[in-house]
Structures are given as C-alpha cells and as structure tokens.
Image (cartoon, rainbow, N blue to C red; front, side):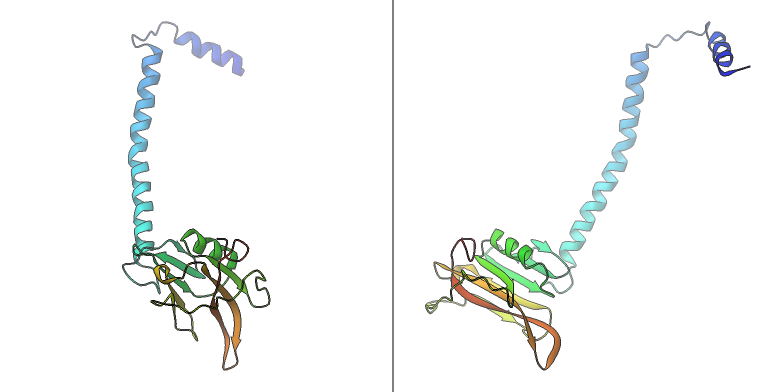
Amino acid sequence: MNDDELMTAVRESFTEVHSATPVEQIVSRSRAVRTRRRIPAMAAALAMVAAAAIAVTTLLPGHPPGRPVTVQLAAWTVAKQADGTVYVTIRELRDPAGLQRTLRADGIPASVTFTGQLNPACRPYLHRLRHGVAIEAAPIYRPPNVLIFHLSDLPPGAGWQIVSGFNLPHHPGIDVFSPIMVYASSQCTGI
C-alpha cells in the first residue's frame, strides 16, 4: 500500500462521521484557548523584566542610593535629580561621544574628549562665578570619579569641556579627567 492508497482508506473510514459543531466555532475556540495559555507566560516574562529593572536601578554598585539612574554603563553612569543636579560617576572614560550625548540630553552643555583630541572650538570661560559651585569633583586620584553638576549655578553662556587621558606619574594606570568651564557654542558644547 502506498501513501495515496492509505490516505484514501483513512478518508473513506470517516465519511459517515459528522460534527454538529461548525468548523469556524472550533477554530475560534482553539484560538481563544491558545491566547489564554499565553497570558500567564507573558505576565511572568513582564514581571521578570520589571524585577530586573528595579534591581538594576536600586542596587547599582558605586552609585549613591536613592538617586534615579538615567544611563548605567560599565564605564560611566549619569543620574539626573529632580532639582536639576546631575551626578556623573566615571569608572573608565570609554565612549566619550556617548557620555557627551547623554550629558547634553540631560541639559549639560558639554564637550567630552581625550587628551590630544581637544575640541578646538572650545574656549576657556574667563568670568568668575558669582554664586554657588557649578561643579564638584571627587575623588580625582582613584576610580570611580564623581562629577556633580549644579545646573542652577552654571553661568549663562557657559558649558563644560571634560578632557580624559591624563596619567599621573605616581599612580600608573589611573586615567584622570579634567572638567574645564568653557564658553557654550554649537561647535563646542552643542548649545
């Protein structure tokens, strides 16, 4: 017996069997059952993603507790506070263009480069600060380094050039950086 003969024999054995339920109703019911079975799996997957997101934002190593995280990378973290203060934790300055984009997105006019690749459009800001401290940095000799930007104290028309790549003679392998206040311009700080 070949395949065609087998299929014909099976088909003929069911010719007397009839269903009172229409085919459309059977198909509709099977789709509903499959959908109902998928919902718990999708809910479990979403719960796992939410739990991971909460764990990442609350248990970040080296990040001050209670501060929301905007971007977390192995090399650096940027966290903007409700009062406009921005905390930048730098463990290793890789991807300066990525850090520059993130700072600008958080409202900080900034140019981020390596030593030897300075942005020639940036000019040092020569005016004195009249009120608070526009930036704090600590510690500067061992990672992670933390920059705290106080946007409310940044003078009008000013921004930051962050230069990385300085090597200290007594601390080999430590990459330090220097924030320099500059005149803000579209070529230098993007603003």
